[in-house]
Image 1 (cartoon, rainbow, N blue to C red):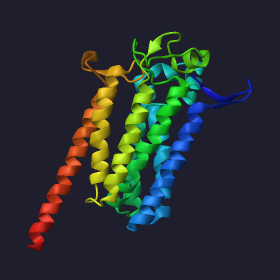
Image 2 (image 1 turned 30 degrees about the horizontal axis):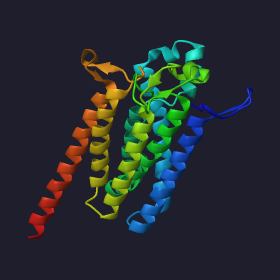
Image 3 (image 1 turned 90 degrees about the horizontal axis):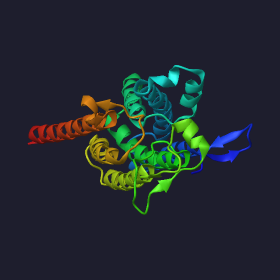
Length: 265
């Protein structure tokens, strides 16, 4: 579609990069607003924390891309492609969660309110990121004969992401962008209802895990890896893990709420 917002030959501004940065900035801004409104945690601390987690997330997304597609590091051209590619979202999410745990322990932060404040912003940033994927041509869908199929023609999309040109494909990037925007609206609403700490994060993990598992059925790019002899993509395997972890967090919050209720009675 539009891999570059500006391309002068010697200087190029990639669409994906612009939208990714936009997503991070808007996500941190909305997290700051939620933190200030809730009054449970310092909004500036939330933004600082979010910046570090975002940086770790970017590194993790590149690392998982290398693990699922080792060819990226086997040549100079592959390394250039790795630097330009967006990476694998799941790798970014896992790295971000690890960084969150480390930072929380190091600076003695309140984990529940912090991650709940940031969870809706992750979905919102991901919405912008998937729009960037659509512009760049990465994370493309399988063959599609529906009226809403898309056809890529820009050679840069094929060069950077291996996008098939001239073929009708499912616009899976737009499917997931719409899904993430709806998920953001749901999580922001849930946060406003002031649930027990951890439940907004748990809801994000379960909802996104289910949605991503289903959306994988229409993906056509090979950068996701495969498990069980190709029965599941690596992303679907991680989605199942997210659902289990989210369910576990929700069960734990239920257990602690019941325990506190018994103590008070």
